[in-house]
Image 1: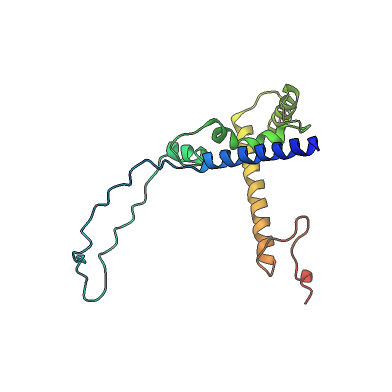
Image 2: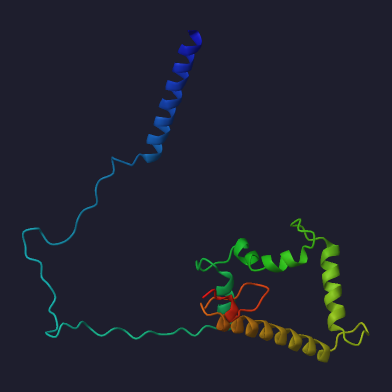
Length: 183
């Protein structure tokens, strides 16, 4: 019997504490005066603006396209929420994919070894003649090859979308064909 009474009292205390907490969060400042309403008195007629007899309003203003500098474009690329400032998360968010490519063991920690292996492999790939020194011509050849690979990937993606009858991209790993349609 004593346990039942203690349980009931505990339940009432918890319910009342929850009720007061809920009311405290939902309360408004009831003592604040209402804002004064400005405008014409209710009994006077409201003056409407004159309209064009053909029902046309004034001409719309011309849209002005803002020309942005490279620095403004770069800043806007990082400023994700467009508040005019870049916080740490916005700055780092653009580098997440690059970080994940470097993190070979997927522990969200980039060790020197992981970074060094990737950097060393890239250096060896760029250094065509193997002399351990990158020349301007080697860098240009590497970047031209990268641009060509990117253009080829983009063309393949566009070709797969064009080949698909429904307008969607073909499933990954196989090209779209007319044989996919069951009809």
